[in-house]
Structures are given as structure tokens and as C-alpha cells.
Image 1 (cartoon, rainbow, N blue to C red):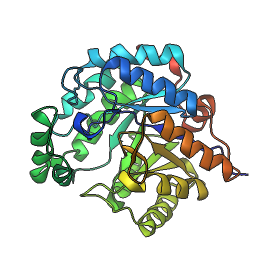
Image 2 (cartoon, rainbow, N blue to C red):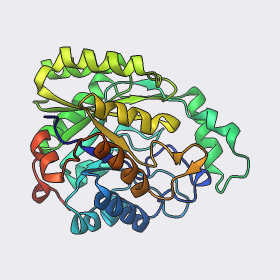
Image 3 (cartoon, helix red, strand yellow):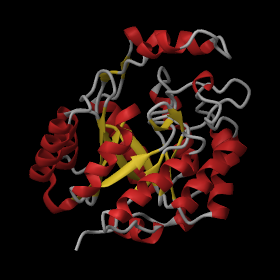
Image 4 (tube, rainbow, N blue to C red):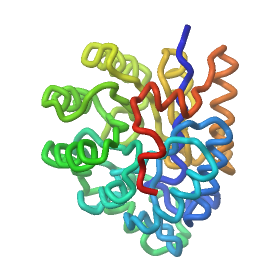
Length: 309
């Protein structure tokens, strides 16, 4: 029988800006509420970023994370996954600050440096709520998201080894899978590995079904029975790729970080709305949705009693 599908929800992220949707959670209270609702809808993992509550700009301040992490923990049993991707343009040290402070069960880890272009969204908007928004998008025209082997080693040891935090390995292209395989060969991480395959970001693998199938095939070859895999796709490809992953025996991620919409031309009013939609699809396929304890067991997590919040 197929294993229950692990649903991850990414409520706010560091890509979309306040002008793009009035439903994007910004303040710690909004992020906490969005996360709790997503967990109640069926998400067993919550992938978290923080934002400046006044401007909505991505913010690495651990004090902001600690305004919503304990509230989510008190209200749900969901696994909290603290981003180390932060916001585009942050230094390695800034991106790791919150995770090192919170010592979470899980943190994200981009598996390579890459062009990361979100500047095409500039043409879709003209009346911006905040001056930083168009500047932030335009910056990515000449931007490389940095995660060198030295950066990855630093995080693996300072956060993984020192805190017992495990990783959501975000693989935006085929080479990132091989980077992870090399990291495994160095003994920096131990199985089970949680591989998040990312599609549809300009600079990474396109949202083409052939890419998903090939990356899944290569991951199977590289990691065998030592990994769990999940899929996320940006924008309009979100639900179709999530569905395809479930059909293939994988897991999936939704949330307003990845797409602001629930259907063609219809903005999602909440993260929970996206979780409910994909949960209904999964269950209509005859599959079940994993609970947080099931996700913890399959991913080898240390438990919510071992975090620092």
C-alpha cells in the first residue's frame, strides 16, 4: 500500500510581496494563524519565513520567528521547518540566525548556488504598497542565490550536527541532487533524507513533467530506500505537480510562498484553502494524508520537545 502523503505548507515565504495579494501573511500574528489553520487542514510540516511586520519585507530577525514559533507549537502538533533560504540577498549568517536560535526539528537547505529570477513579476504590477518591492524584484535580474559547498558544510555542521536539526533538501535542478549525493558521501548527513524537488523558478528546472520524472528517477538511483521525496511547483503549476507527486508515491508542498492562487484567475484567500484542496485531491485518489507523528517517524526527526522555543 502507498504511504500516507506528507503535506508541507509554506505560508508566506520570501518571494511574493504585499502588493501581490492581500491574503499573504505578514505579521507574526498572521503567520501564526495561517500556520495553525494549515495544520488543522492537514499539513504536517510548516515551512516558515519571517517578515518585517510594518513593510512585509523578508526579515531574518530571530526575535520575529520567536513571536510565532511558540504560538504554532502550542496550538498544533505540526513539524516546524525554519527556512535557511531567508530572503533573496541575505548573507549566509543572516539566513541561519533564526534556525540556530530556535534549534528546530527541521530546516530548509538549498543544495546549490543558482540564478534566482523573480524580476518578470515586475510587469504585472504598477501600484506598489511599498518602495522596496520593485527594487527587490529588479535586483534579481543580476542576482545569484549563493549556497556553495562551504556554505552547505557550515550549515550541516553548525545546525545539523550541533542541534540535531534535519533538513528539507531543496533541489531546484538535476545537479542539486548530485550535490546532495556528494554531501552524503562526506558523511555530513545521515538517512533518511527529505528531498524537495522544486520546479518553475527562473534559473532552475522548468515545470515540465519530463523534468519531474527524470529527477525522481535519478534520486531513486542516488538514494535508493534512504530518502523521502516531495515536490513543489511555482505559480499555476502548483496543484498539478503536487497531484502528480502523490500519484507517483511522493509527498508535496503547497502554500502562498509558492503560489498565490487556488485556481485560474482566483487568488487563494488562505493557505488552509490550498491545503484543503490538495488534501481532497489526495483522498479522492484513494490515498491518505500523513499525521505529524507519521511524518516525524518517517523523516527521523528529534521531536518537538527538543526545540528551543
